Image 1 (tube, helix red, strand yellow):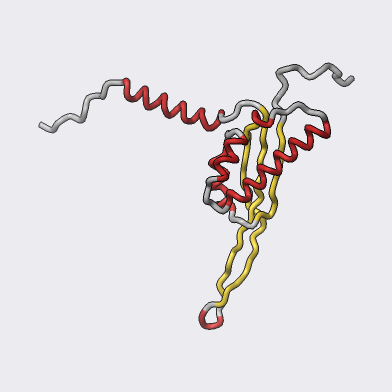
Image 2 (cartoon, helix red, strand yellow):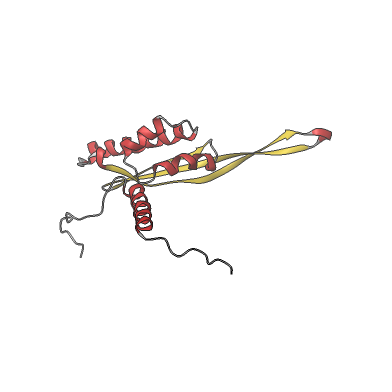
Length: 161
């Protein structure tokens, strides 16, 4: 028999997904931008993208707008109570899409290959702990530096006699 009890207050955070498929940018170039956004609040991510000069920022900004549109649509459609300011990028990744293969003319009647690489860019946003992944690493680095600074220096190398 199915469980009909109400969802407890400690239920897992809701996740929302969007993807751009066959984006005309190489995965390597798109990853430069996506690495900046992991674990960030969506509002902070929009600010980062607005001032990022990389070409991939336009693709990722459009993707972020799409996932926010998905959230607002679900709010109206299913009457969900979702605070957009609490949404954080839980996961963002870039997969390679099929590569377009072309050729360019070369000397002596030869042809040299050109590979036009494409990307599938995915994003998952969730309610809850914004900036957690980005700040956890910073806290660990600061803690290890503080621990290293508080320890007295060990004995140096022994002098040769």
